[in-house]
Length: 403
Ligand SMILES: Cc1ncc(COP(=O)(O)O)c(C=O)c1O
Image (cartoon, rainbow, N blue to C red; front, side, top):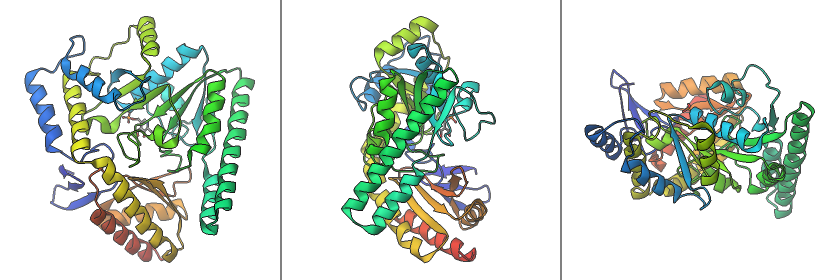
């Protein structure tokens, strides 16, 4: 790829591909307002963060205004992995414990500490990490309820989701205890992306959050995937999911391609961490990062991209659900806003579909412990006509695969 524009990317030989994979260019590839803000600031001063700069102060004020009032302080780094690494260090020093809960097949980044919290890539089962089951059982129950289309079936499905989560959390905490670890934190990607892209109701997370709270442990919301309006209904995924975190971590989309990571938490927590560690990141929160972050917030607001994620996401999901009965290989269509998972029969078919779609000019990804969930996560300016193009290409790819 040599160039990007909006939801499109271009190859060296001029082929145009629809980017339905990428949440880094959140407000669109090469958005002129972001590019200009970065260039303008780079022409003025690009330094390390030993020098104060108004840009980053303004960004902190704008960013924290989008959070619940107690989450009022930021620390800046350069990636989602670094943000999660710091969040994990804070949780351990705040609680004096070393155990953590993560979701099944979660992914939180690449540092040594955070890899251990990422069953999606970790090759060893770290004793201080216990996994919570994906709401898969309950998603099945929810789709059964949807099929039954009765309010009481829906209520039963929700109740069983909550019960499953409660039992599962208690078991995981006991497992940590048996290995000698008290609980420091729950780290959770609000979109449950690598876990398989689920959209359980707040009643699913409520018993998990309260078990964590009862032990005085911290909740770390990893918003690298779902943040900045991707759910379409809420600016932050944790709000959509229905829980209140102590620490929020941001990455990929915040700088629209400019490398940025942010840890948002309560001022008292951050001040203690600073006192204890004298934390300093050379590039984290540099003036160019501040300019990029501000421009992204401006564009999101000006172009009403969260609203677009809701309306286009609803349209996209409805179209995919219309397609499902025509292809036996589609097992489920789920997600919210512009974070959509299409579960298909198996990993082999998933790979075949991803590659076939690429040949038809559409880039998508795959997720889930069984590698059988098509991941549709485009830049936010994705419109209904783009959704139509994807559904059309997917229908042809499924037919070509005999599915
Ligand atoms: C949920 C989640 N958290 C953290 C990360 C790590 O971010 P980065 O690759 O910017 O370090 C990722 C990257 O894919 C992610 O998906």
